Amino acid sequence: MKDTQIKKLIEAEKKRQKRVINLIASENYVSKDVLEALGSELTNKYAEGYSGKRYYGGQTFVDKIEDLCKERALKLFGLNSKKWAVNVQPLSGSPANLAVYLALVPKEGKIMGMSLDHGGHLTHGHKVSATGKFWIQVPYGVNKNTEQIDYEEIKKIAIAEKPDIIVAGYTAYPRKVDFKKFREIVDSIKHTDPNKKTYLMVDMSHFAGLVAGKALPSPFDYADVVTTTVHKTLRGPRSAMIFSKIDSREINKKIDKAVFPGLQGGPHINQIAAVAVALKEADTAVFKKYAKQIIKNADTLAKELKKLGWKIISGGTDTHLILMDTWMEGKGISGKEASDVLEKNGIIVNKNTIPNETRSPMDPSGIRLGTAAETTRGKKEKDFVLIARKIDKILRSH
Image 1 (tube, rainbow, N blue to C red):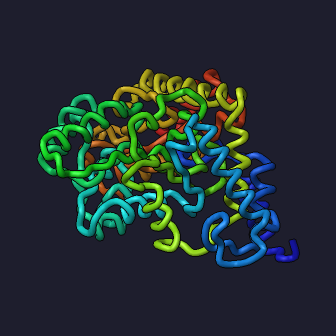
Image 2 (cartoon, rainbow, N blue to C red):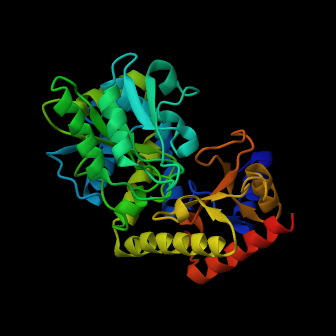
């Protein structure tokens, strides 16, 4: 690279990544093959439109790449192409979610999603997001005592509010989700109001790799729409996909129009090629073993931290992530302080709000931990016992 300034910064970042313990729940390490596709000549090609229906010439190979990516996405999650469609053009998770709402939720309609401080995402209707400015959020949270989803409470809220879409899937909720119960909640709205159309959307961005690896239940038997990023447990590039049912409601066609021309211009074909590579890598026995190891490692980390006296939200984890209360009602350390001091000692986490948060989101009561990245590096249960003890020692000596 002739640009020495950028080259030095890239090299510095590579060294930083190698020398730290990465516990960011939304990060992972891609393969050299994914990087090769991402940095290929495909970045030169503008491909506005969809396969077979482009606005520019020279699309012979681009169409094949996008078609192959879609084929691999459906295959990985065991989906019939006559029943499910997938759009692989979204640039990232937030625009993917926005596209779904643009397609299916009327202006000033209701999005029922988990509140931010209980583990939901900004794009599940939070007021600071565009999704909370164009639509109305009907928030739900976790039970105060169990710190887990209370499906009966969600059902009461849903029947009373009759939202246009219910979002299941979170950014800081450590437990597996009962998608069947969410389907029953959506159906209960229709029973009370036969004319009301409510969709069930699952945002599986965080746990998509765990579903692909058969380590967590699949949402596809119950959802109308499933969105996901690719760069977390699925171990691909920064990108996203939208899966939608093919039925009389034409959900898939509406979503395609919302992505293009509704929100985006030409897709990033180099990104789509890299997604295709990651999807093929995930469709292996080795990846299934990896997905299961992620959960084993997270469970070990949570149990060891709990054993050392730290409060683990909901009492543990079923997934790759852990939400840890570091503040403990003023007896510990704030989330920001915890994140900062851990980083100084080579452990990377992120500060995070916890259910019934009493502090500012910029300096909350907890931190979020994830095991996907370090599992990619080959770490197992014994390693996470040592990581937990190191975290404990650092935080208690601060």
